[in-house]
Amino acid sequence: MKTFEHEPVMTGEVFEILDLKPGGIYLDCTLGGGGHALKAAGILGQGGTIVGLDVDQDAIEAAQQRLSGIECETFIEKSSYVKLDEVLAKLGIGKVDGALFDLGVSSFQLDETGRGFTYREDAPLDMRMDRSAAVTAASLVNEADERRLTRLIGNFGEERWAARIARFIADFRTKSRIETTGQLIGIIETAIPKGAREKGQHPARRTFQALRIAVNTELENIEKALPKAIEALRPGGRLAVLSYHSLEDRIVKNIFRSAENPCTCPPDIPVCVCGLKPTATVLTRKPVLPSEAEIERNQRARSAKLRAVEKISNQE
Ligand code: SAH
Image (tube, rainbow, N blue to C red):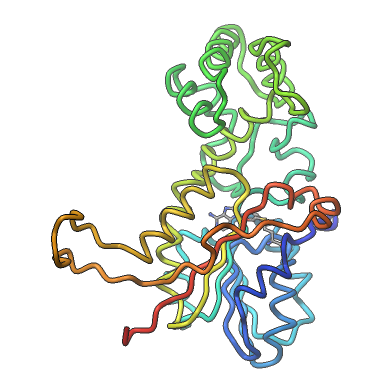
């Protein structure tokens, strides 16, 4: 197996904000190659506990190897973070001290041949993080109707040529199925006029992002999982999220905001009647960004944004 080359993003900032203590419990919702988890292990030490989740079997194996020598008690589970509550219950773990979501795709997944995540390689159109899932990029591109493709590429890729790309996809597949990233790139390149392309960006970048988000139901997953993660924190426990594009970041920001201020009463009502109480305090008014030095060293850090909340104590 290829080595899992993925430099963890903003580790200094992440672990400063999580403020883990020796002996604590850390929940890594996106274990990947275990880069962040390894760093956490160094802080937690013997007596500490790490729970790591990932949907990608290759990531699980890489993390198992990477974390094999650590002193903490380690539980690695192939599970979606959407089910983090079920996993914790199964393991008999009550509340955790710190949790991390490092969203998006790992460098390993991008580099691993044959997974179809990247427009830099000709591969089958797959893009599943969990290879036991039913929907692939190929099934979407070949089976979704043109209107749905337009919406999907427009919404998840923020691609202004979405309608034209969807039309060209629909035309192409009347002749033959679209099976590879190379075929799709060819279609996108014919759909977006040369003069209208974004400078320095691959013309397929937005469509690939859109398909990846759709195949892995990424935004829906974040929406379901973040409230569960806040719920899983002990009072004073912290949740940090690294996001990599504006769609993710907006969801994270809104969920954190409504954890801090969940009241749904109209503003002209003098006292709150909805009864919804804050569950967490936002620690990052503005997202924390990586240093210039890290961006230079680590490609994946380029678009990273870090946000965090702290769970409110029950007495408040
Ligand atoms: N922090 C890691 C890298 C994480 S990359 C490190 O330092 O090595 C993001 C990971 O999230 C990928 O491995 C991907 O498979 C995983 N992932 C994506 N969606 C997921 C989900 N719904 N549940 C669990 N893991 C998920």
